[in-house]
Image 1 (spheres, helix red, strand yellow):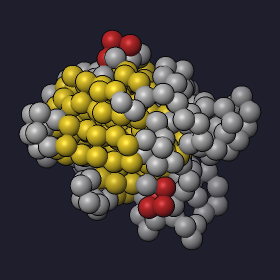
Image 2 (cartoon, helix red, strand yellow):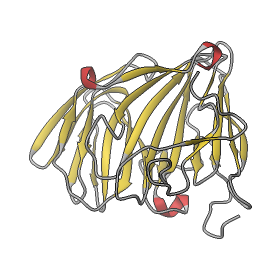
Image 3 (cartoon, helix red, strand yellow):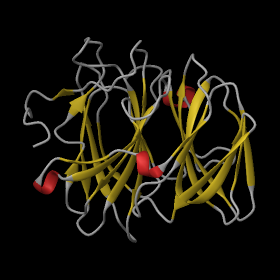
Image 4 (cartoon, helix red, strand yellow):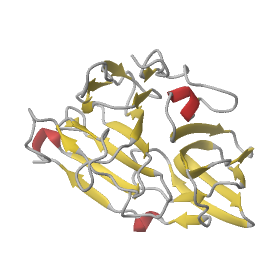
Length: 274
């Protein structure tokens, strides 16, 4: 295991809490350089202020609505009742900014972040403009919401998408990786998975297998509010328990000059998204 890697790549609900955040994963805690994730819970009428620092952030409602005040603008997010309801709108907060998140009725909000260099303008991301695709087929079918994918929304380094896997299906499959710089073929990206599961007592499974000697390896039972770190390695499948849809938010960023999601499939599983 790398000396700067956390003791566990699986962070069960509550173990990554810090301050006002039930989940707070910064690059220092993850043992890498770029990707970050916070989950914020606000009660009715509560306001949360934060400094974006050297990172850009996408404020994504998980449940509830909010307003985001940044750079003299107020971005009103209609949100949704849950991650299983559908696509949500979101807000982009640039680096070196002071931001406030306020919610009249309360809710839960993800802050997907990436350490970056350029300061882009604060912006509103409308829900109708989020590209949605059905990926895979049969019991590998899942729904991908590309709200901040590399080709859907302009960021400096941040790439973030949502995936909903129907109960009983596999996703993040075939196993794939993005831990080598191979122009046009593969990009280096640190990745965080954050999970929510529909219905009481639901669970899922996440697999990471090494792509190099001493590389990342994990087989974990994941539950609502858990997170998994993917510093390197083949990741997948993510498996949803029958009767319980599995949601995960993927947050990615890396050192490449081009912001791109280039992956390589495991050589034993080359069928692609069939």
